[in-house]
Every structure is written in structure tokens, then in C-alpha cells.
Length: 129
Image 1 (cartoon, rainbow, N blue to C red):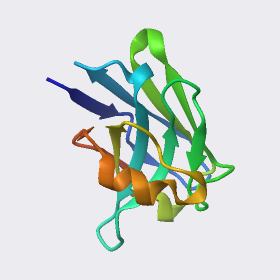
Image 2 (image 1 turned 180 degrees about the vertical axis):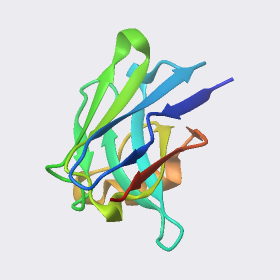
Image 3 (image 1 turned 90 degrees about the horizontal axis):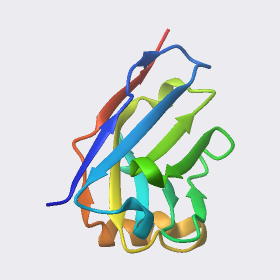
């Protein structure tokens, strides 16, 4: 049984940093694309970042490009999302999900959304002073 568990969410001040973790059981994250998406109460679900299986190609939404970094640590079967320069509009529940691939280019989320296989229960990130 595949299980993805997100952790690392917290309350942080604007301009601060957090690192989210996505740890898997029942699946090797090195073989799959792993994406992060977020859901805020008043906004549509939004793809944040994705890392491809195999070659570790990365994708980011325009809203987080230059501030967030996705990475993989295969030995721990974990994918990280390093979030820097956090802004109040980053406040959301963050989820990680597995899929066969990320999708292409800047529209990666459109493809990824429809081919997600498993996802976790999410971790809450609140950016507020």
C-alpha cells in the first residue's frame, strides 16, 4: 500500500523559511515524479513544484519560482520542498503526490493533476506576522 506523508508545516513570519518533507512507504520515490500542490480556502488548487523520476528535472509555478526549491533524497525515500522568502499568499495546506511523470514545461501542472496516483493528507503552512 502506497502512503505519502507530508510534514514540516508551521506558522512563519513573512520573509521566513520552511522545509517541507514528503516521505513515502510502499513506493520508491526515485522511480516516480513527485509533485507538490497547495490548497487555500479561497483559492483553487495550485501546482507548486514537481521533480521527475530518474533525471530529477524540476518544474515550478511562476508564483514560487526563485523562492522554492524541490529536491530528492533517495536514501531516505523523501522529497523536500525548501520554501524561502515566504509571503502571506503562500498560506495553504501543502500536499505531495506521486505520478508517472511531471508533465511538460510551464504547463506541467495541467498534466500532472490528471495523472496523480497517490497523495498525502497535507501539512499546513501559515505565513503571518
